Amino acid sequence: MSPIAVEIAVIAMVISVASAIVNKKVTNQKRMKEIKEKVSNFQKRYNEAKKSGDKELIGKMEHEQKEVMALSMEMMSGSFKPMLFTFLPIIIIFFLLQQKYVGESTVITLPVIGTLGWFWWYFIVAIVAGLGFEAIYKVVTKEKKK
Image 1: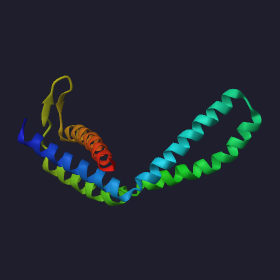
Image 2: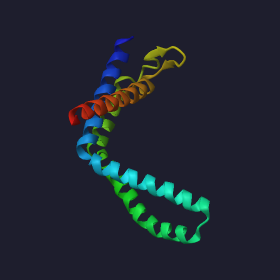
Image 3: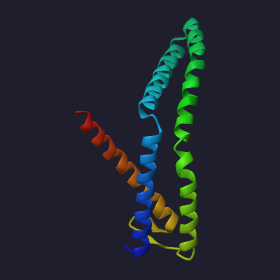
Image 4: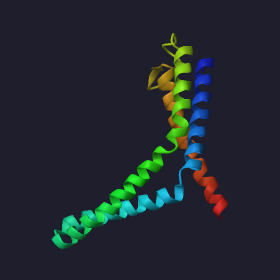
């Protein structure tokens, strides 16, 4: 693996983990999970009501839908909060990476995928690192609760 590929991979991992940490610290995870469960439960009940064809039940569900929409908006605004802290630094880092690797057309060659430039290599590493960190974070937090 080329030194450029290693450098970009390290940067991608650091940014991905830092973004995930900011997300965990800034977002009320318990509240987000609670809202997600309520919305999911409502959607399941609403779909069952539509399948049954019960007009009265559907009417009641449509009244409840306003509350669920408010919860969905709360969840959406909660998910945007971490972006206030991460968006600008990531844009600056991308600008610097673009300036540094402007002449590099191939950073790494992967089997099956082929050759990748710096952006796509960063993108793949960031996704894998983010998913890995999430999995590790879930295991660690479950261990703390025991």
